[in-house]
Length: 395
Image 1 (cartoon, rainbow, N blue to C red):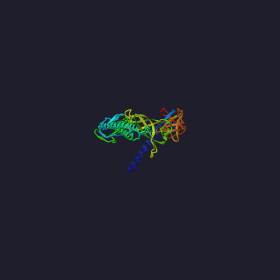
Image 2: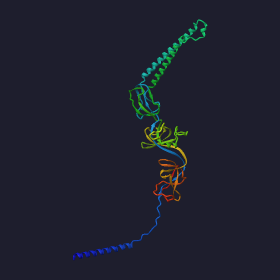
Image 3: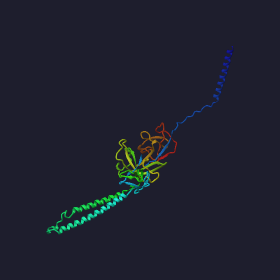
Image 4: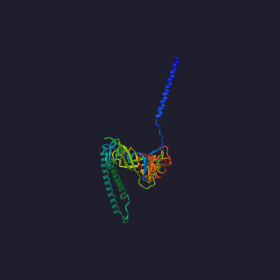
């Protein structure tokens, strides 16, 4: 009996709670305001654009390479001897000027050789003088002792006139003079002077050291000019002139060499001077040589071994426009926005594509606006909104 009463009580409580809940829900629903229905217009995509400016535009060919000296030699003596003087500039990295004395070999032995050669020349001159007098006397005796007058008009035989002895004396004098020139030249060669303005890249000599002819004492390179060899595709040479390689009869194209040294971004002016003798057999690329004059004029200098970027200025194109690479789409199509804010597809003729920009030869007019931002879904004639002020792409 108790269990039945408990079940009845629980059932009644449950029914009462449900009734209160239903009544509360109806009350809340009745007090909730009705939602108003609105018709939303389709969203207009936002784009970034640039404004085109047509005009004259030079073609720029980017490249990279390593700086190398125009001249580099092994500094060697032509005579042997003991080193008695070394210039302060003859150290690794030392700078010198053309004609500076860098080394001095002990000249005492070479002074003595000059003195000995001079005495031999004087002796040979004396012998030649004696031979000339004897030859003259022999000729005079020949003409005086002829038996009949018929010999008056005939020259004496060479042996009678002592012509062989005279020729031998002359030859000996010439030989001794040559020996004197050699002795003087060897004496001059005891001073080793700089053949150009430059620097030392390696030094291997000390004071008091005995050196032999042909021994490498240092490595010197010229600072008057440097060269950068840049590998380029065969098609790139269409846009600029390489003397001796491309058909145009004109000076080499100008170039700008850029590098970052000691935290500074520096640049130097140069020009294309030639192409190396043959193509790279492995890559089939052409090695073009760019020369920079006076690379040590500014500090830090354009030193050999430095890796640099080269910008070669090629032929100038007229009535072209420049757009960013992001503005060009498949099949050479760009998106042009008109004054009403509508996007239209436009096919253009591309003259050249570089790493950052594109030169358009035809298809765009001066002042037109081109989209540079990407869009997921694009249709011809769709409405767009320009979010940023137009940039001007200079030609």
